[in-house]
Image (cartoon, rainbow, N blue to C red; front, side, top):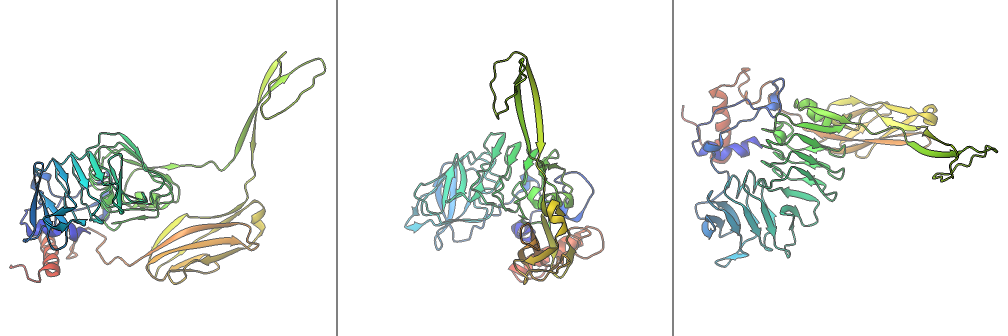
Length: 429
């Protein structure tokens, strides 16, 4: 991810300084760092080719590839971009990676029905953008209240950074949040529904006003986890509200992000208010809702607690490297306490579990581990994500020569890797 972000910055000859950047204050750890540049030095990451053609819109030009029908770039002076279905006979079918990124003057954009794909970070850090409008006949995308979604609204793609709202609750239909979806937004509070399972790279990057983010236990994946860039350059006052033993709690602890635990009540409390009429005969009649002519009325509040029984695994989510193991425990409650526990995995080829609760990651992927009582009456589950072993240095991010410090030698090694990958020529010493 980082190499993808840096490639054009290096090739453009931008003189960069490696800054230790904290999303949230705290101890320096490898994953809290990323390479940054000042906005004034920013060079577009949009992938405009030498043969791309221009098309005039308000404030400047947008650029497109005549061979692929892809919008690739725009002038930073563009204020409004109404993308046509065709330009000089070329049907526009896609908006490329970073095509409109960092277009500070852009206030609105219209996407035609011909567009079938929108690239990575296409509208990231467009700080004046307040409106995204998608043609109603587009079969892949839609816009609701100027916010960009895929057609069936299961993915939120871009919340315009220029919208001047304080709070936003993501719709319950959404299951994933796209890379850069809220990048640079002005929101102070975002609530994520329990339908969401994954969050992309740089999703909340540069959200300087964001102080409250509620993330449910259903979220079991955040892209870019090796670097922690999803919350990079956020407000120092950001607090994540999450559930105990959830993936998000683990993530927040790993990247030193302040969090507060949301607690669900383990007890079901029923309160009834009784109005009791005292008469000579002392007759008392109880109903759920009671209206009785009062001689003398006494209010009594009764609280009843349901007995709890079942089985509970010690965690709701685990993430382990391939080849490693982790021991789980299951607690039997109430009538389940006298029963033995059976363990099973939905995908033993990814994560296997023995009858002691020992989980081993065998291949990259996701599996569900289930614990159940011997009679099958009580069960509990957790999600296991098995990741490839991280070969990057973990002591200091960017310390590519392993000497324990960040120097120009590390930058040269990284640059050489970029050049080797894309251009196959060496750096002259």
